[in-house]
Length: 312
Image (cartoon, rainbow, N blue to C red; front, side, top):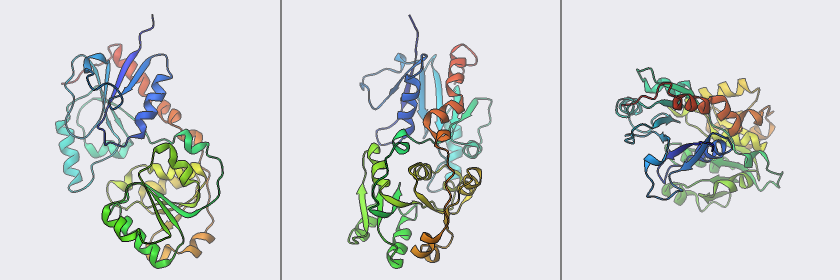
């Protein structure tokens, strides 16, 4: 009889975490694990039924005994006083057996002062974005993600209307104020929140993918999943300029159109005449490749064999 380590991914119902589905598919294709999503199993479950408890960290922690505990930090704190929030999390969340960070910038931002093992797990792209068939272009631009004032999307749309840039499709749930202000414009299409599997088909009907990320902490340090998805779909990328995107552009030998001054640069003539370069290798960013590279599965098996299961 083969013994399989049971992993429970613990998350709230409202949390949008495409990596959970990717993890579950990945681990359930191995001969060593069975993985479960806390939001898709019987709510009467007990943590005692699992060998690995995997949490995506806000504040607090599950009370466990004799279980392997994984704390994942896919992003730094946002909003007001993010540095203080990071520090509070590092003090309150306790010691797991393994920490998972998006990248070194996220790890350094929490300032953990202990010897807990860790690994990096970057964002990946699902197969749905890789296998999309070419489609007719109905929109000039697509924007995927948070449609909020904190992401300065209201400024983007204001300039878009003023400069008469064409038709834009926004995929995601807009803030009420933004929606009410711009719903009257026929060239601005709000899809609302759609099932993730439908996103590639909608986005592929655009020419340009908008990666509109404010150049502020912590957004400017973290991977833009939508930029990866745009490239996988073969869209031409238009982006604000910030640290992560500049590094990515160099490392992947790409060339993106930069919105350094949105009032001047959000100009359809400049955008259409720019020489875009896409040397993005989707094989390096599939979820399987990303999780393989993280060595997470190997570390968990080592922990189970008794190499350092310790948490307070």
